Length: 361
Image (cartoon, rainbow, N blue to C red; front, side, top):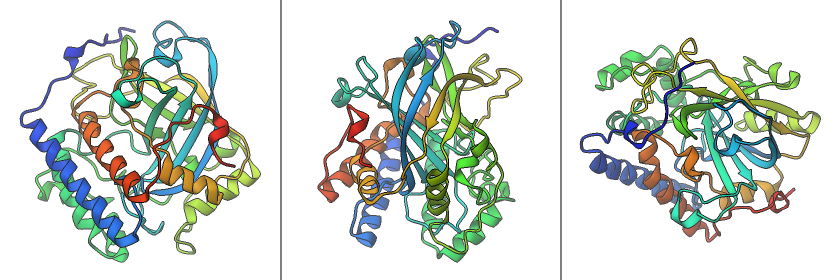
């Protein structure tokens, strides 16, 4: 198969991009401040609600040349810490349907990293969500979508549930707001068990000599059995956390880490993250396994460490895995602004673990 080679010129800066990014960061900071005033505690401007944090291992096998790139160039085993979350930057009741996130921090990764203040760290982050695409796939659309998010966040939880139900039917909603060609289905997905879902980087990243989107899919029988399972979220505002904690009390889990390499820049664009890459053009190819043993996933010490000290950032990466496209370029300023505010308000250090033993039990 003919895979597109990475070159810097595959990225094309959008008109007025810098001004739009500044506006987005300003809106996100305002949301951060509002959330702090509500909770008297700094929380993330996205993926604020943690459902559990687990430790495990990334096992990388010997791979063919086109997959043996960057972190995956050689077979190896790396400790990982994984934070499961809900996507909004607010602590919503789990009865409000939302996408979920899997943030993976790989420990023991040598080599200089992209961010200037993290060049000598030994960690590499991969951030994934239960949506294969970002419905608002470039900076301009993302800025419009922030108004939808702000409108939804200002309503009651009953109103948000109604919004989610409408959104599942929902491209007309965005059409009325002048937002073109996305789908809201993933934004307002049913309340499926978060461990049975497949997680995606949504936007593209550099994959060594190539370009890829990364995903993590249920692999072991215990998590595959949860695929499509709808949780009763009416009994507890933290039903997803309760289900995750109960699962890891009884079972371990394995996920297959996969790469979908770009083969056509027109049909598999870099700058528009709302376009789903057709697997007929390029299939998902296994590049590793995430192996998570049975454990306590939500102890008080681990919850506080994960929420207040750890940070996950798609730009905390090897140059061989640089985030690509305008949506990813938004995240350079957005993540730094949010992280700096959260750690300052909570008076907590910004921690990049150098050993898995640093993660509390």
